[in-house]
Length: 178
Image (cartoon, helix red, strand yellow):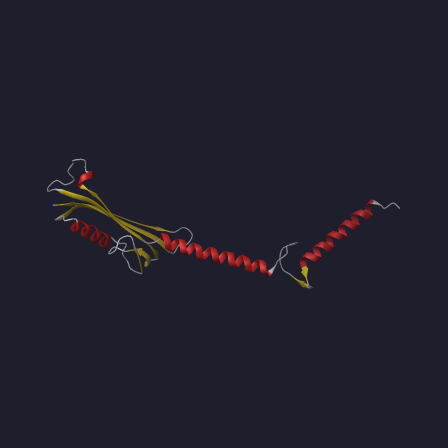
């Protein structure tokens, strides 16, 4: 028996309508969404778990890298016989830095100036006074009578995605001399 072309087109159209209806309903309940999309509650929960886990990992990474303080020295043996001070004897060149994460002006995680290479929570140690104190204390511990040619730099920048968070860095360097 021969069927006409219109019959094939009609049959194909009816199959598409059935597939569309099956995708839009599940157990007699209409599921909102775009045409032809299947929405599964378990899939949504899994996506939410993945996003939450990613947020925790991101927070952990921020805690790992946020808040740092360091102090470095270059002893007189590395000066190649040159003088670093106009008067007296140069003992060392000292460079100290401190950085931290701030919520607007409130310190969250910063580097410790009393104990370099460690972090503190809620202490505003990313300022020129605190880092200068760290550098001059190191100069005194090296046996220097004075610290000359102190230079400081302070930078503050907004974190691009979260505009209320700021990253602040302070660097101070000077020459320890007798």
